[in-house]
Length: 172
Image (cartoon, rainbow, N blue to C red):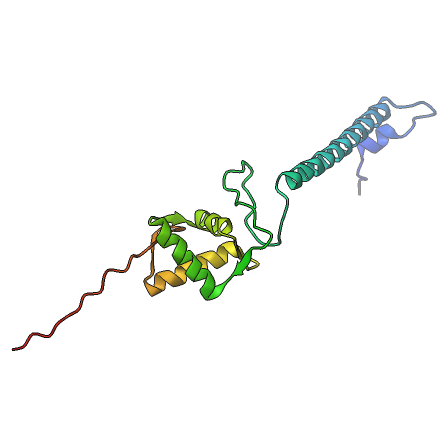
């Protein structure tokens, strides 16, 4: 049975005391790979450093005042106003009542982020681990009761109650 010959191994073995040219090429390629590895490690270190600086700048620009609330988009366009230090926590029936109040006073359609911002301006805080979901659930419940109309996804409008009409029984 013939032996399998590995040309790379044969070239790298010294031949009668002298160095084979293939071994030098192998050593050069190995050094180039090690140099690339060092460069990659240095780039990764620089990237980690820059990412840390970016996190620090974001924390300075948008500090977390509480454990609840919406974070701003990277361009800062839909950032909520800060929560007042003495804000009243809302959930359940009280949340739905304040939302209806805001929607009726606004007399138009409001998107959930706008409604959320108006609640913050009035000194309220959505007391929940997931405030956006809680607000959406409250509006969904009010839609099911017929107090609010869903204009489009995430946009709601209060339904103004028509004046009740009295029906009089006519004498036959």
